[in-house]
View 1 (cartoon, rainbow, N blue to C red):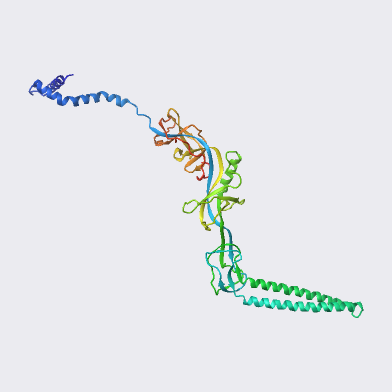
View 2 (view 1 turned 30 degrees about the vertical axis):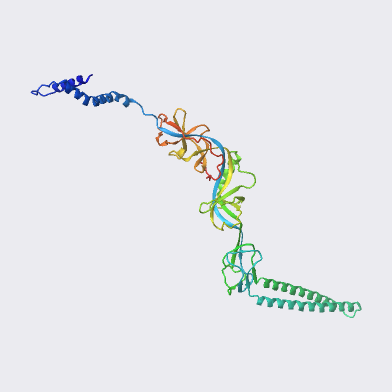
Length: 431
């Protein structure tokens, strides 16, 4: 329709709807009609075009929502268990006096390294030196008596041959000689004991290590085997770390190894790395020495002992630490990001498997625990399948309804990650 036609049609419509008695519609000249056409025609054409396409826009179906997917892969994995515990010195000795007396001198510097046999304290030896002298004199007396008894016994023996004395007299002389020899032995033992007591006035370090603070000062009275130690010496190189592991987890891992699900992490003793209180990783690796065979009845756990070299004494006793142990190896392990795994109302774990045509299947899986930030999957998905990890909030499952459909967007990395999960803590228990 031309501009003049549109203008004329509008004017006629106005004349038909005009009320009675109104003036008839005026016929405008061609110049006025042309001006109207230039001003009003473009908006009218746009409105008409929009109205003509409106039905098509209303009837078109929206595209399926997008969902990021990754491809399931299987690769060798090393399971690493993280256990907590405390450090313990290789050797520890509490220094106590073995004789009574007054402390005359302290011979070490607190916090310093001491060697085995080093003198730490000196107790007043005057009393014990006097006892040594007394015991030595008693020994000399006993030896003199023994010499006299020996001479008498020999004389009586000769006289018995000539029948100058009776048998009873000789027997008495022989018994007296033997008794005198016994007295010599007793006196010698008492002298040895007195010397030992005198030596113990010098309190020695029983082991080599680092000594702590002293609980006594010069002039203090100490007693033999008193409850409170004078000081404590600890050998810090190497250092033990005692960690605890659930007996249920230990038995589960053992059974799964017997079934062939896992392999042993390595020959010989297992290695471990240490995580300090501040989260830093200790620079040296440790080796597992043994696992206890007794289960703690209160906690249901067993103790594992790990030995770490500590030449710089960086590790201190009784510090809370965590140890990561390589416990087993999985030849073909499957992991899924934690965001790809959900749970239903019954607590069962499932994931969303996306087919090639975009349909989504709810797939229930069995997990062995976490491996870092991923779930370790035992069964439920296979290598090559695609699992939704992003946009899962747009996936809705309805009971008995059709399967959801998405537009998959591949988020798989270009190159597969490393095949070793070392450094990630594997927490026990099937999920």
